[in-house]
Length: 301
Ligand SMILES: [Zn+2]
Image (cartoon, rainbow, N blue to C red):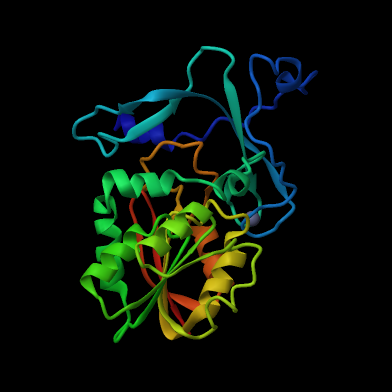
């Protein structure tokens, strides 16, 4: 058949590019400013030094809620906040890839931590929208709780939305939130949820949560926003008792993904990278769901 003959044809030879005579991002920086303020010389996931430029994306913030309209396709109704518009000035987002662990990450990236310490957006979201959008993750936590769960930690807990749902359903649970945003921690205190201000990368956490004491930890939508996710995961696994579980999400690229690159997500990993991450931890994969992101539940050995 025509199609099968076509697909069996050998791939064209790789193109050799002429050497660059100048750096366009320097020469035209007024129209095409480079996004990000923190330059990385190592992979944020594995620490490897063999990193190189993969993507250079023009992106303009749309500023109005926009959704893909393609009924029947896997990406129908996906939310877009950026598109490559021809308007200038136009920010250019550069992503590198790590040769060893295959992570794709923004470089330079934004200094998420500096702006986030005084961030009030999560508290405002809780006050205006309640906890509705966290019902799904709270349900999933309940499904993954090990038997006789009593102690639950939400690391990078926002304003405590998931914890608030769990408290309502399970008043007997001991709940604790860890959060970088001071306004979020103060807010949780005001509604009676235990929370501590913590920088998960830099702070020593043993004095906040004793090692080996926790049944279940949620680390939701935060893997890509800490500086060194494996360092943080090691600290969290240390909190777990034997048989305790940790659920985390990570942005994913791979053959099943139909999501667009979103420049607000600074790290994407593939299955190879996920397996390497898990190999660094004193835990095994208990459950792995791959849809628009990795949803990983680990169980401590
Ligand atoms: Zn790496």
